[in-house]
Length: 357
Picture 1 (cartoon, helix red, strand yellow):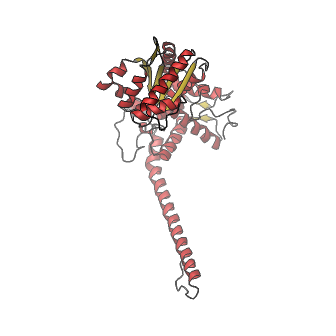
Picture 2 (cartoon, helix red, strand yellow):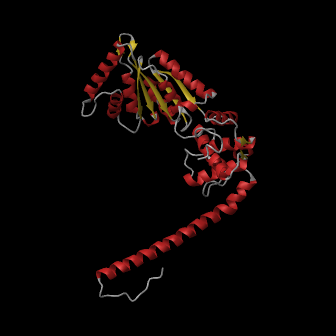
Picture 3 (cartoon, helix red, strand yellow):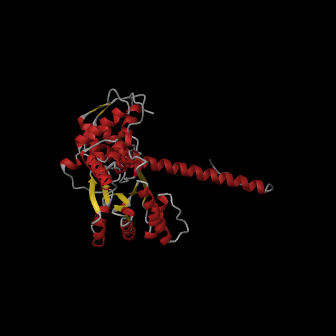
C-alpha cells in the first residue's frame, strides 16, 4: 500500500523470514559461522538459540538454500510436544521414508539403510529441527541415538537444533550430559543494540528499493529500539506500521512521538502479546500494572503519559458505550423478527404490542 509513496519496489518489513533481507549483525554472523563450521565437521549437534523473531530461521533458510543438492540431503522438521516414537517417525518422514503404521524397529532399520545408501553415493545427511525447546527429554535422547549411526569412521547424520532460550536450560539438566557431549558448537542470538537497530532498518529499506530513505530522527530510532527490544521481527512490526502511519498522514519524516503512537496502537491491538513490540518498556501500558522505572530503561515522553491517562480510559469507555448501543439494536431487531415469524405461523393472531426499533 505504502510502497509507491516511499519509492519502494517491495515491502521492506514483512514478518515472514526472507534470506534475501538477511542482516549480518555481529551475533548473526557468529551463528552463521557456527552452522558453516558444523557443516564441515559433518558430525554431532549444532545448537542455535534465540528469542522469537531473533532471526534464527532466516539464517537456517539461507544456509539450506546455499547447499549443493548433489552433496547434501537436508531434512527439516518443526518440533511439537511429541513422544520419542513420534519424533523418530517424523525424522524418517522428513527424509522421505514411509513411517505410517510401521514398527519403531523397522523405522530405525529403514532410516539407517537410507543414511548408508546416501553415504555410499558421497552424500551427507543433515537434519534441522526447529522449535527444539518443544522436544521432550526422551525425544532428545532419540536424536542422540541417531547420531550413533556410522559407516566405517563416518558419521551418517548431523543435526542442527534451533530453539528458543529455554532450550539452553533444558540442555543443562543432569540427564542431558550424554547429549551435551555430542554438541560440537552452540550459539545464542541476542537482540540488536540501538546502533544495529538503525543499521538493520536502513539495510532493509535499501534492499526494498529505497533511493531516498525516510527521514527518521535519532530519537525515533531509539524509540523503535525500545519498543522492539532489538528483536528483528518486532522491529519489522513497528516499522511496517510506522510507514503505513506515514502514508495515511502524508508524511515522510518520523519523530519519537510517531513511533510511540504506533507502538501503543500495536500493543492495544495485540493485548501485549510477547511476539509483538515490547511496550511493557513504557509506563502504564499494562492494565493495572505498576513499574519501577529508571530513566534509561523506561523513559517515555510526557505527551505519551498524558495521552494514556486522559485518552486511554475515555476511548475504552466510548467503545464500550458504542458496543452496548449496537447490542441493544441487535436484540431489538431480533425480537422484531421473531414477532414476524410468529405472526406468519399464526395468521389469525395479531400482536397487541409494538416492539420499538
